[in-house]
Amino acid sequence: MGKRNVLKAGVVVLALGLLAVVGCSSNSSSSAKTPAEIAPTELRTVATGTSTATPAKGSLYVCPRTIDSPIGPLTLPTTFTAASTPWTSNGIIDISKITTVPGAVTMEHQFTITTSDTQRYLKGNGIPNHAIGTFPIPADSPAYPYYAGLPAEGYDNAAEIPVGPYNLDLTIPKNPTVNATPTCLTSLITGVSSQTGGTWHAEMAADSQLKLYDPNAALPTDQCFGHPYMQQYHYHGYSYKCMPDQGNAGEQSPMFGYAVDGFGIFGPLDANGEWITNDQLDECHGRTSMIPWDGKMVEMYHYVINNEFPYSVGCLRGTPGTMSHDMMH
Image 1 (cartoon, rainbow, N blue to C red):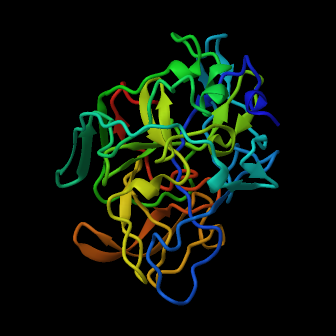
Image 2: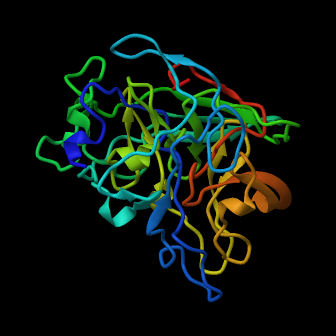
């Protein structure tokens, strides 16, 4: 399918999270390799018909919601449709073929993490501490046609959306607990990177024809798998490639950030430095094992970023914290 036909003109793409982060195309070998040596070559995307209505491995569990669009209120669909792009085939996204939003733009970054006895406070301006792509997207960029045919409220088209600072203010429990049943995703933001100050969004993009897509399969992003929605820059897919600390060879991946329920989001390698697959994770894309937490090693639930959909947080095992109204609910 041609680039200009990926998501037909008139389709409103609502990127609810290019959060997710990607793993590698296969498990790591028995010999210790650095994170760079086992960087993912592919992502495993979602299949047509996959439901968002209940918790399940390989999907998202999303609270029913109506969202505003240039053509009026839209109720989010409850099943996914597989996107058709030059970098996606038979459920596999070839990372080397993804059209990338060009540029290496640096912006003023603000971010702090503080704690009380019971709470953790993440505050900043939503701008990560690394370079991002050029937004609005340059008209001569190969990425431009994918966005130019998409309407965006307040702009000529989605390619014209810039990145700007906003009030990132998230309060989460310092020591979260696992609830008996998972909670559906209540906001677009699923987590905040403690390493960069950037946010992850849920891995879904809805169009005006009431079709739901994996954003990584449908749209180009920048070199850090990020782009803006409503001017707010956020991550999808293989976002951890831009994390300053990705860990060491043969060791467990470090923590990349916090989910909106307070649990940690960790990288794709286990304590032996081996790749964690979806088969080893629960319906929310997490598991319980020994992890570093506030300076101690504890056995605790946490989410895992890998290369299989939904890539990071699929639903919430804890109780969501509170966000400022400037953040994407």
